[in-house]
Image (cartoon, rainbow, N blue to C red):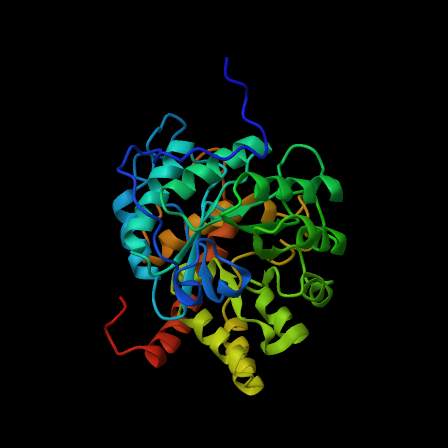
Length: 371
């Protein structure tokens, strides 16, 4: 009788969960070329967090194969351009909570193929327990995904020791796959204190980055505590606050808004890296002139009581469909309600961002190279 597998056992070779022929792991992009696992040094540039396109007739609870793979491939090719280092799949805006596991695998494999090695691919694996997260990490790694975007399990409220131990277990189970912490204080019932970050440095060596979504009250201290081991990536609009705190030390950012066209975010990061404070100020002013997608007060408390926490997923779908740039398709259940006031606000943002993008796309590329 075979004993159950235990920590420390040498893992068996992993079969492709989609039944495809085995293949060597593809080379890394950017400064990480030739490495088997991304490190914090490889995390540079803009990381776009797009929606997961849904087939027009697959938005119901009875859908078992909802992902529009043709649109996913087109979206992937369209988003990857100069300054875009990676894509982050299956977070909140990517409906990681509503996708079936088989849908994740097919979608991730499609993105890996469409990206053709031109971008790092992170995929969300947040689940209710450690073993399920590990299962998904291994499956996604087998289809070519570079790293896992991982939030804390969503049932109990975690302690610091529990939270650090969770990521330490992931490092032990999948020691050759990079992890990006999804530090969202709205959803994970945790404020991500300094001892959490120092604990990760000590106990979770595969954590190489964090999608910072828990606020910036301790950001400078967090950057110091992680000491280059974990890239603390600000996102829109937190990039503006991070600039005030650490200036041109920022070299990687995430963005959901960049799914509307990455050129403005790419321009902002380039200005930050150059250290040209006047130019950064000009670009930030341009961003702030674009209407917010959220009504006033929607993010006031940074916890589950905010309206933002109720409608974030739906906003992502509505904004992309309204833009006409990506056919994001219907929202997947259960998160399908969006008040009319939010829809109108999102449409104002889409129109404003289109003008912003036109300005920076014209400056960045020859006319007609991006639709």
